Image 1: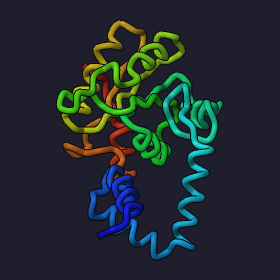
Image 2: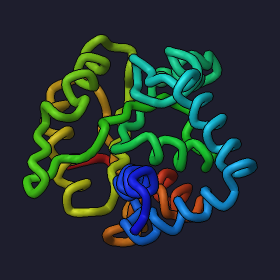
Image 3: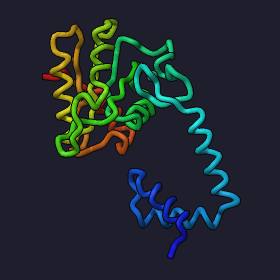
Image 4: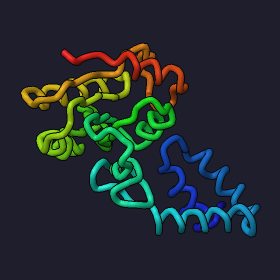
Length: 198
Ligand SMILES: [Zn+2]
C-alpha cells in the first residue's frame, strides 16, 4: 500500500499530458529516493515558474514579461501574424528562425468530440487584432490533423472580407503531424512554401 502522499502526488502527475498512472508512480518513487537533491531542485523550479511565468495578453504566449518578448520585439514584423494552436507550436516555429512576424495562440483546436467550440478558443481576440489593422498576412499554422484543418478552415471563413492575405503552411507536413514534433527542416520547408487559403 502506498501512502496517501504518494497516491496524491501520483494522481497529480498522472494528469500531465503524456504521463499515465504507471509512469507517474515511477516518477514519484524516483523523486522520493532523491528527496534531498532532485526533489528540492524540482520544487525550486516549480516555484520560480509559478512566480515568474505569465500569459501574454496580446498573443497568449508564456513568458516572464507581459507583453511577451516576441510581441515587444521591435525587430519583428508586426504586419505578419502566425496563428498556432498551442504555445508549444509557437516555440517550435520560433526555433526554426524563419518566421519573423508575430504570433497568435488559440489555446487549442476545435473538436466536436471534446466539445471545444469557437468561443472556447481565442478566435474573437484574433479577429479583434486583425480588425484593428496593420496586419497584411495571417499565416494559419494549425497541425495537419483533421481537427487542426477544421480549425484553419473555420478561421479562414471568419477572416473573409477583412483586408488580409490568408496563407497556410504547405503540407509537406506529414498527415496527422503535430508541429511540436517536427524536425526544424520540415517545419522550415512548410513555412517557406506556405500558400494562399481557398
Ligand atoms: Zn505576446
